[in-house]
Image (cartoon, rainbow, N blue to C red; front, side):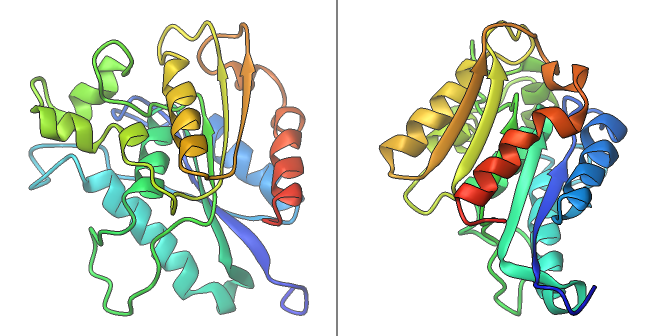
Length: 236
C-alpha cells in the first residue's frame, strides 16, 4: 500500500556452510513472518564461494550482500521502504555473510557510482559464524570461504569480531550454549566487541538446543523477540 508509511526492510541470508542454502526454513519461512509484521523482506541467494568462477571467492558473498543493500536503498521509494531502516539478517554461515556486511561496509566491493550507503542500519544474527579463528570458527565454512590454508591476514580480515568499530550497526543475536557446529563463542565475542565499541546490542543465549535450535519452533514464536527489539530500537 503506497499510501502507508514506508516500512523497514531486511535482507535475509540463509545458512548452509558456504556450500548450500537452507532456503525455505531460513529464508521464505522467515520472510513470511516479517511480511505479516509489516517489514519488507528480501531473501538473498548469495553466490557460494567457488575458485572456478570467482577471481576472489572470499568476497563473492559479501559483494552480493552489498548489492542487495544497495538495490533495496536505490528502490526504496518505489518499494515503499524507509532507506534509513534497511537491515541484514543471517543464519549460521549466512550470519557470516551478514556480519561481514555489517563490518566491511566502508569499502565498496561492488561498483557504486551513486554513492549509495552500503551500511546496514541493523543486523540480526542467528547462531552465526562470526570468526575464522581456529577453535572458534566453523571449519567447513572457513575452508569453503578462504580455502584450506588461509593466511593470517585473511583470517583476521574475515573474523568479524575483530572488525567492529563505533559505526557497526545495532545488532540482535541468538545462540545455544551447546551448539556443536558453530561454537557460542562466535556470538559472545561479537557481542563483547559491540559493547566495547558503544554499539547497541542485545543477545539471547539458551543453555541447550544445538545448532539450528530456533527452527524447532514456529518462526512466529521465536521471532517475537526480534520485533520487540526492533520496536524498542526505533527500527520498526
